[in-house]
Length: 143
Length: 403
Image (tube, rainbow over all chains, first blue to last red; front, side, top):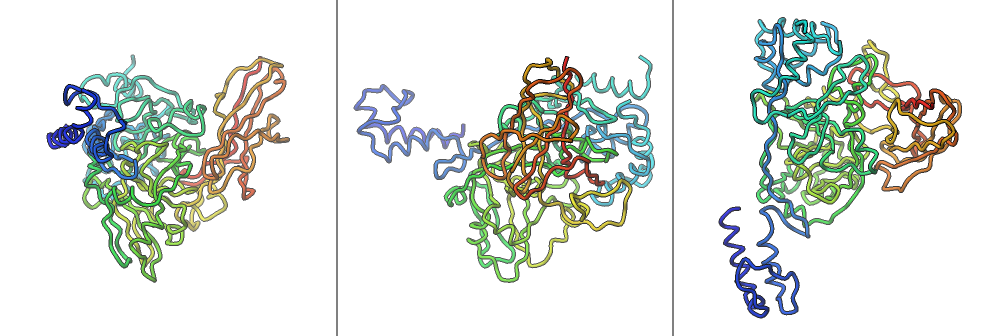
């Protein structure tokens, strides 16, 4: 948790000090009652703000900052000719997309590879185009 | 093992343990009923904020909702809601405090809205099905290229957010505006690749139903479903529901960019149907969804006892309209019986249905289910076909072994 938030949290506890003193809590780590008869609204709001994870908050909805890690590697291309696949195709997408395709004709695979280069701007060398289509047309999905 | 290509691939698939730490581990596998295969997919729990999902592609992620999830209710849980991204550059950190939504273009006052600004606006809530244009593509015959989904590239959620109209009105749309284009934070891997953007006609964008959602099912959106905000276009395919929405541009000319002009096009024919191999037909951008219905409590090949009442239950959706009726047939469509409909959560929501076969006779019982929407449009008995593998909505059927 960032230090500045801890500082805010500490400040909020001080704001709530009167309440805490009245009910005899020993110090900052003690649980703070959500509602007491004496607690001024300002201190409640401050306490709530201090206990919230960082993010956007308004109208009772919190959108907390988020950090995740996405898996990056799927199964690789294998077998004869896989080098040209792993070199040219995996920058944009993992191999699962290709290895789950149905049996497609060489003409269809050729269109697909052209689309990757022409529409999606895959930087595939002319010399590799035929080898990629060869690999794809030789796949035997589903047996 | 004989080193055929198949076996080499199989070895590669089973020998995944070596190497990367962030691999989408295959906890188990599932066999999908795609005609001609390949049918095997890994079931993964490796994706953040996601439970068990069918792995169609690791990067950029294509994650299908396991079928059993749909029998648990009309709302699809966030942690098993399907995932589909086009480009692999997806922010993995989102700072909600500094997030900005730009509203610009043909407007009087360009805006930079913070999430606090959006959260402070009048709120709306709506249940709506989000379905990939290519949901069920793997079931096409003849097969077509693309993500080989079965029926799980869809989900239903209660979306909370603000009206797009209110946001546009705040900026003040100028006379002469015709369309609104939406962009998210995902980016092409290659610098000159076409950034994923989509647009709606201005009248549609301002219809009061299109939303910017910051919650689904009462919680923040998972990052992979578009945290912190995404567009909700009720009744339309998910391609328009731009995730991690960051930019709204009001246009005064038709959107001629790739994802509208070239990709996601359907034949301009009834139910987007053409003959396999047909060419030369006019195309239009994919748009409204069509009605669908599914059995969720029984799988194809399920077993039942003769004479014992058999409950059949499932989900239906009307597409761009509400569900008017769900009918079931056990005689190959010669006669249909009305199923009982569950609670109405709104015209764009899934609706649960159920029906009981009073006395299943011994043998192979084929159960067909058909949704008719409030426009009177019913699912067809014969599947439509198009080269994109879009808009599948044929009457579904399962076979139950009564013995």
